Each structure stands twice: as C-alpha cells, then as structure tokens.
Image (cartoon, rainbow, N blue to C red; front, side, top):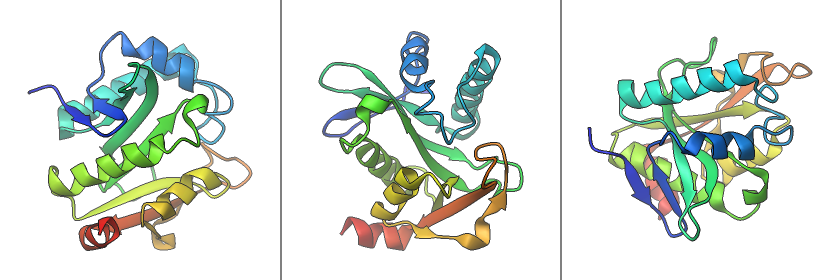
Length: 185
C-alpha cells in the first residue's frame, strides 16, 4: 500500500514512522494532554496504543495519522479516522479524533487537521456519517466538534469510566455527508 500523506496549509497528516513515536509521546503523554484520555500512559499502555494505531491502518486503510507541522517538521500529535471500538459505544462507525501537544493548542491546528480528516472521510473513504467522542467536561474537544458543524448525538452516548471517573459517560457528536458539504459551503 502506498504511504499516506495529506497536506493542508500548515500541516502534514501522514503515516507513522518509527522515529515519530518518541516525539509524539514526549509532547502528548503529559498530565494536561492526557487529562481526559485516561491519564499519563506507562510503557505498556504506550506500546499498546501504538500497535492499535498501526492496526487501524492495516485493517481499514486509515488511522489517527501523525500530524507534522510543515514549517519545521515538528510532530504535533495525531489526527485522523478510525472505526469506533469503545466498549458500549457505537461500534464500527467512522470516528474522527485528535490529540495535540499543549503548545499546539489554541492555534487552529486541531481544526485544520480535523477538517482535512473529515474531507478524507467523505471524499476518499466514502463515509456517510462520522462521529467524534469525548467526555462532557472536555469542553475544548466538544467545542471543536461544534465548530466543525457536528451535532450532539445523545442517543449514542454510553457509560465508560475510563476517561472521567467523576462523570463516567462518553458523549458523541456526529456529522453526515450532506451536513459536512453544507458546512464547508
């Protein structure tokens, strides 16, 4: 399979390289980034996460790709597409997701990468609907979902204490092809 690479104005979404992982974990495996993602990962959790991301690419042709900043080649995190696989959740649905290091927050990188990922979901991977998930208290994440034109899907919410023990519910947003086309104008 040809290497995946998709460029936006400021970013490159691409397949993972072995040398990316140390930079990715250094930038994103922090208390701030991991606050709503189950906490800082130990070595075993990091290895398992890497293997999952690589398996999504093999099994579905897409994953949460490495996000590289075009200007300097810095690894900012990941963004992309996978099939929803959270226990209790909407299994098998196309899911967009992102995780960026803290110094990349508030600069529009997540929206730029997520927009590119949604374009790919509908144009290249022929999705009819794409979901995104987070916890209620992760206001930055669901705020971005709203700015992307996604709508709240309480009918798809599910119980899961892995990410927020105080409010153990995963909330779901979604957007369908027609809504995305209208949102992109």
